[in-house]
Image (tube, rainbow, N blue to C red; front, top):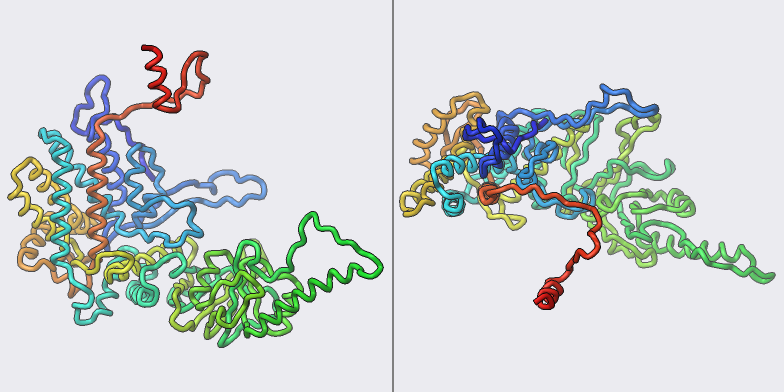
Length: 583
């Protein structure tokens, strides 16, 4: 839950004035710091969860027929917390952009972003702003601070590139990839199976690269146990099953037809136009019209059988006439599959989405070693049992699915986030999705090494920007301090020890939960280089944007109609013409 932030509070201690006024950049710094304080305890392997309560409906009298369900979020994922917090301060949208650009909906967007590193970005941005306010109080102009921060960011990123290592440089690249996935899930060990989840993420990255909504969906079910969770080399339709019980529950070596399209995405008899008129006479009766549709259906069915279809997956409906033909010939029919899941099935099985029923060929069909229906959990408030269909043993699929079993809805969402973030981390470390390839030491080693490089560069800087560069280095070292503090160790001692060790070996980091300084690579604590570069850049941009704000204007808008004679100009040229007339 968030506490409203009063932008008129003066953190410098000048609040004793009779009528306090907002002080910039201090007012906005307080707001960003408050958000960072809410996230700080979720940072690192010894993190804790946050409970964001949106509504406690169980404590209220529900309406007749309604079920009182509490709306809350319990997570340690920075992006999830940032989106769930009811932030009202004007600077909040700037910080929220660290999660990623807004998208029009979240169900059918190809290439959906996998957000990671949000917590570290917010913490670093807040640390930069805290350092900046101290410099402003000492008389350094915000422009000099922004310039120094940008220079320092470039130096820090160059230092990370120099110390980074390719996964191929490790003795066991596969094990190094697992270490990257494991590090990405620190603090979010669902079911105590971090090692198993890391291997699932590595295998998923091996198969599909950088994950997207269509290439790596995560399906969660409450039945079973979490130990039964696995990576399905294929697709899972968690809310779709065969239309008729007479159809087979399991098909081996299945050829799969995928039907899509807004108007024709199914096995349906064409609709007649609303203004269609049939003229019936003695020679041609109404039965002849039915015969036309029967002939059309027969032609389509002949096309399907000639192609050798075993399973039909349709975006829209399947008519009763086709259902009978499917069941009689042991062909499975699955209908009402949304577009995103339909695309996932097509990618996983290698099928081409067919939109013309008369243009079905064997080349359009996908393939799965097994297509099987599973009964999973009973539908709430219903006597029926929920069913799902699993397509697996697909040969070299372009999409896979992580099936997480034995978890409730909230925990399932956390598992889905962790798996996708871990997979994205492995893909980023390999340089996929436009990322800079390589890994850097975790446990604060990368930050301490970058901070040392920035301090060295600051000594050679002959302007006030050097003060900002030193402040940037101090802000970087607040990240490992937060890691150690969350683990219950002494952050001052740990960062001091890390500085000393890092001078001899840049791959030294704090290994938690023990808190000892050691070889980050040997401990399996590896961060993708691209994630660190993005985090530094994002934090620097947020800090620079906030520092450029020097005033707040309360704009008031009136919806009243203009008075007679008031001119409303839509064009600059029109205003200029009237100006010339007045002269």
